[in-house]
View (spheres, rainbow, N blue to C red):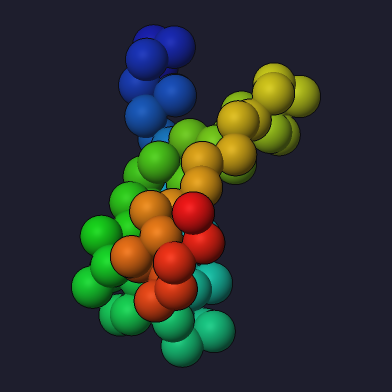
Length: 69
């Protein structure tokens, strides 16, 4: 297995775990309706696991239902 194949396999495994956890918590559908990107979250999880800095992205105010800015 090549490095790229291993990286993709790791990403898919983490993405599946993210989706399963969101489903377990009962929020997967709501987040999908808000445009949540589970692949982006999986990439951040992998970066954090590899001890890389993960920047915090603030959602747009309209997605929270409040005007924070």
